[in-house]
Length: 300
Image (cartoon, rainbow, N blue to C red; front, side, top):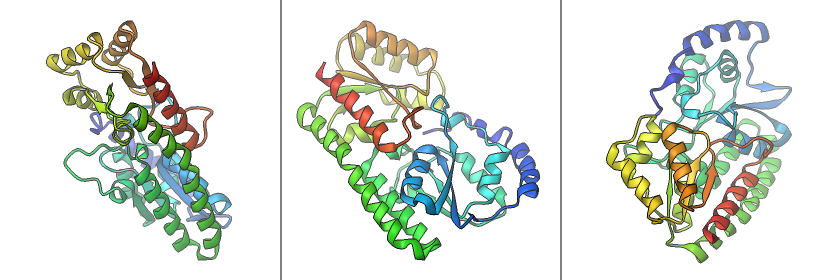
C-alpha cells in the first residue's frame, strides 16, 4: 500500500530530538525488570506478541487508535524512546509503516528486527501489506516471534512454546469460519474500498470485482479516475456484487459516497479495519467477528 504522501516524515526529526530528552531522563535498556522489551509498529502484531510472550515480555505498540489511518501516522518522541529501549522490534514492512525504518535508523541501537513482509515472502512491486488477514502468515509470524523470544531468553523456552501452541490452536475457529464461507459462498462476487481484506477474500474463494485503479487510488489518498469511479458505481447499482467491504479507517468523500450508494442499492456493507477495534483486545476475537459479519452479509 502506498504511504499516502508519507506524512510520517513530518515531525519525525522533532520527535527524535525530544526522545533524547526522554532517554536521558529514564535511560534505555532492552528489558524491564527481567522482561523482554518489544515494540511493534501496529497493535495487531503487538497484541499477538503479547499473547506469545506472556509475563516474560513487555510490549509497546505504536499505532493503536481504532480511528487512526496507519498510513498517515506521525512518530512521536515516546515512539523513539520505545524503539531505543527495545530488544525486539516488529515491523510490518511492504511500505506500510515506513516510519518504523526511520525510527530504527535514528535510534542508535541494534535490536532484533522481525519484518512481517519478509516472513510472508511478499514479492512484486506493490504487495498487499495487510498480512494479518492471511492466517498462514500469522502462524509463520507467531513462530518467528517465539523463536526470537527463545534466543533472547532461553530459560523461558518451555513457556514460550506452550503459548505458541495455544495461540495456533486459537486460530482454528477462524479457519473453520473461512472454510464455512468458502463452502457455502465460494465464487460469490464482492468488492472493497481498499485491499485490506484481500487475503481473507482469497482464502474464502470470493471473487473481488473492485477496479484495481479505484482501490489503489483510495490507498494512495488520491481521487480515483472517472472511469474507475463509474465502474465501481455500476457494480453497486447493477447489483453485480453480493457484499461491499468498507475500510472504516479510511473515510473520504469518495468512500462515503460508495458506502451510501451500496446501502441505497440494497448491497450489504461489512466494515473492516486495519487496527484492533476499541474494547476488543485480541486478534482472534476481532478476526472472528469480521468473518462472522461477512458470512451473515453473504447470506442476505
